[in-house]
Image 1: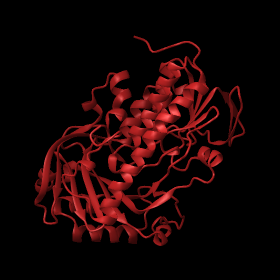
Image 2 (image 1 turned 90 degrees about the vertical axis):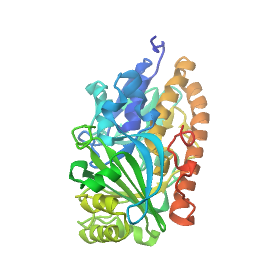
Image 3 (image 1 turned 90 degrees about the horizontal axis):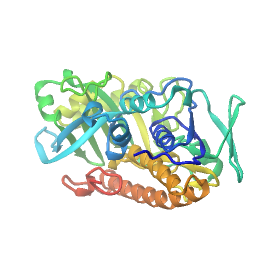
Length: 398
């Protein structure tokens, strides 16, 4: 049965990552005239970025494109916690699916008309009025739409315009990330890691390792990548130095692969060799280009401003511990499409209903991920088997 209805608005989506693409696709499917404006001059990529995929993340590929989840994601049957000597501290059966940012991005991008995904279009400002929104770009061009969906991420220019007092709040720790070819694991490390989401807890720290599709999208054992995420406390006074790259440039949020200074990477690898369980240490010390992301919280009091809305990290940047950041961005798009259908295309009516629902979800998710992160990094109450640790958007496991 078609979801298309009459009188759907024209929509400009600013930001062409996973949240922006999902919003564009579901809005297109209900009959909106949608164009995505991406500031990057070339198609996006995130080298070494693995993600746990919840139902909402895979909903469009599975429900609308008919792609089986196992074709674009790997799966694990166990959650396992290791002791420093590599023995198992705790394990429980639980199915998770994992993918890579690149795999999901390419899947969504391929489903959108190329003429509707415009590169090199960085928004500089917008003006909202009763009839629509005028969006201006740094190249001097502008466009007019009935609805502006801002999916421009943690450093959102849209949020800076409408909520200048809302800024990222540093959580007190960073995430070291990277990937290592599963085929290069030794037999013992492979046996320990290939079928599980594997954790190790350390004082004021924890690390996760899990398999994701290979660079070519392969999901078969032996052709995948092992993805690691290591959360380590860094004092706020020391953060700027940690985020200074090998050229001396300071980065505000993250260091991409290859940008971290040699001495910083060497110190991290030395710590890994000295403190991590041998299978996990093999992955961390073997990652050729580890990269770093500072963990921030962002919470907004509003998501709607006339005919403009903020979605995904532009509104709520949540800590990664529920594996729900990409799921939340996708859900923002799905719910927006549903509200537009319910309102028969009336943008103000749809946005009012949408905002009430998504503000509640965003605030609850942020509070939950803060609690999990603080329990690991600061209070020491992060324990194996705790149900709070089960990934989920709406609650643990859901």
